[in-house]
Image (cartoon, rainbow, N blue to C red):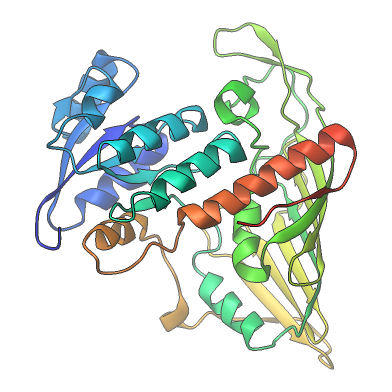
Amino acid sequence: MANETIKVGFVGAGANTALRHIPGLRAQQGVELAGVANRTIESSQTAVDKFELGEAYPTWLHLIEDPEIDAICIGTWPYMHSTITLAALDNGKHVLCEARMSMNSLEARDMYAASVANPDLTTQIVPPPHLMACEKHLMDLIADGFIGEVVNVNIRVTDGSSYPDSDAEAHWRQMRELSGNNVMTTGIWYENLMRLVGTASSVSANAQIVVPYRRGWDGNRYPMTIPDQLDVIYSLAGGGSVNMTVTTVSGSFAPPTEIWIFGTEGTLRIEVNGLDVDPKVTGARKGDQVMSEIVVPDEKRGSWRVEEEFINAIRGIEPVTRSNFTDALKYMEFTDAVQQSWQTGKRVYLPGL
């Protein structure tokens, strides 16, 4: 499809689809936003009217089975990702799927197998944006020996943390029927770390459900089965270890999300203060007296280009790197290992592809 118009249909025009994918795809040359299927035809028509998305389809199956549609952008919660992806690939559609990849690694492996079985179709999972601005420079620093060999990584994730509140309405990430084995933003940050220090070989996890009941969207109280406080220790396949804490219940005075990477020759620190501000990177090498700010060169500064990469991959211009189904499967295997370790109290060893 090097020069043909690419017609994209949306399954679930939710918040992130409206914020990023609709404008991002509209900005690409030769792309037509051709249709949408939300949970009801009325919601679909509202999205068509608001975002100029072509046709409102009665169901997502009608959209996927339309031979005029070339690519599908999946904006639902994870509970539908595998089902829609498999159907889309079976109908010859390219797939851009919102993260997290799926509910669990079994679904993720089915998606991966289907993508391998359809090498002519582009498949992509939306990557996390947190480190995009500095990721390339950090990868180069580590590859060039700035820290030497990795000894330990310490990451504390406090995004959205507040004091425990049983009256607060449950977020979809706290609903296992929508989110599966995904725990808060654990998979997001594992994916970020994967690019810097590699994958895990084994995992030990301890977790708490500090708020055991939360209000559902219907106002009723429901028991929670997804942790809101998680501590993970994992060994890296390439050597070294990671201590990860993810919490949403550490109060309003919790420090910002930060990553410390300790090596045999140096140290890196990345502080993340939300998505609207570039991460602050500081570092030091053996013999330095203080940590100094590390400025990302303009030529290495990354930015959000997910939709551009997706369309370029369909046209054969570049491969998908952020994120391909191979990498997404790896973070789902980690997610399941965390779940299994928490439930059994044992160290869990991760499979290889």
